[in-house]
Image 1: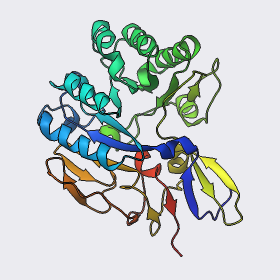
Image 2 (image 1 turned 180 degrees about the vertical axis):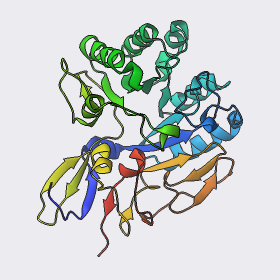
Image 3 (image 1 turned 30 degrees about the horizontal axis):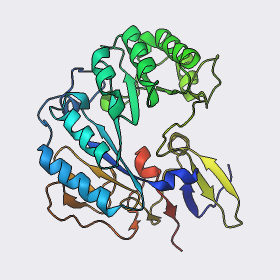
Length: 322
């Protein structure tokens, strides 16, 4: 891999059309996975008042008139927010795109009634409590009207069955992107005890549909993808396409001292309504959802962290400072 690049830019010009707000909304979840931090399912954070949420979202939409704003919500299981439908209807009525990360466990009637409100959904299969047949039906149903990405959480003792689920989705549901995910204690600790054969599959690069899958995508018209691969730009003008997992795996996720566009291309919001440029925390809190007037960042931030592990933070333009 070529060294010495001076810029990291979006690999697809379409990504530049979007401003992304990633919101860790609340900690209510019907699953209690062993590898998930308790803070994500303890029920202590039950979501902010709807009017505060709407006010902030409207400020973002009005400020970013030159962009399409994409709000992505996670938790917890966002579909259990008491004002889920009202919030998503509000966002759609005001021209925003909507997305969420979900375990897909709500019944088919729920998804049938509300699928029109969702532009992008990341469905994560959690094998300790998830039902494979139901999950497959939800993926198939939502794929009819929205962009679907599937994460399969690879529990070692169910590894073969989970690979089977991934192959089934890849073979039968056109247009879905799929990723098999290694598990870590509390999501950031020691990796689970995989066999050598399992680790080899998890470490493989993208593989074709019909074989073992690490990550695959089959064709579908009008996929809505808001962030993705990046490009390294070298002083001689040459470019090299990379993706965040590759950069992390190869230890190339250090941009200390570079200018970074977090805050200009995206914002993040935590459980408590604190607004930040990115999940790295560089630049500190820049406001709160309840602020009547929100002051948006106008300049890149000087990176002060040694390693960047958040995909959203990585997928913002970066320029080396000389």
